[in-house]
Image (cartoon, rainbow, N blue to C red):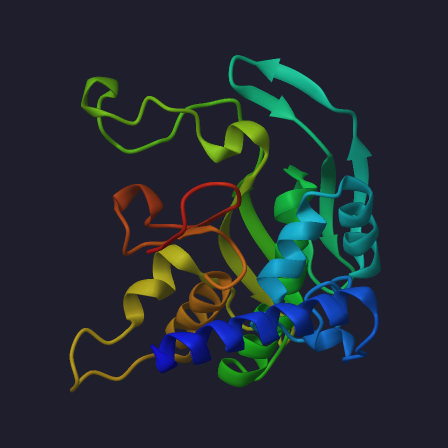
Length: 247
């Protein structure tokens, strides 16, 4: 009985503290304030998903944030493009100033925003750590596409639902060019270079790819890579809005 009372008291105290922070009666650094606006320059922490989710639901704030992140883009008008397909708060993204895309791509701001965080706080630090250089170009295989999920199976065996690509909420990434002009890091070639047993050595490229894959899982709802199935042998699939998955 005493333990229940103590737990209830702690819960009430936490609620009171949360309300005090929300009302501005207690001041905490924005980094540790769940109601503070997302700061692109701050490394992600345990509150980032809360702030990111709120920004993704607020179209004007989302566009403002990807602009602050240095993303180069043009807004695209909202429109229905087919059965189960639509563009809503979408942009034609060219990439960042430091890492342009190989070609402009149609994406919702909902996926462009975590992409901006990932490029700054995951991709570039991992490149410096494992490759000793920065990434200067990101090659993609597509964003928006009015189509169903591609499973590699016949429609009668499943996979008939719309892909997150159909609402521009997904992006497929295939390769990364280096500032030192070394060989570009390719998912198809370099992912398989990771060790398959304790006696095998890994390559820097494979370690880099695994680091950015794991880092993406903290910012996107869905992350699929070469270990998921043969369809994804040559790219990372990054999506928002679906079931949480890190494969």
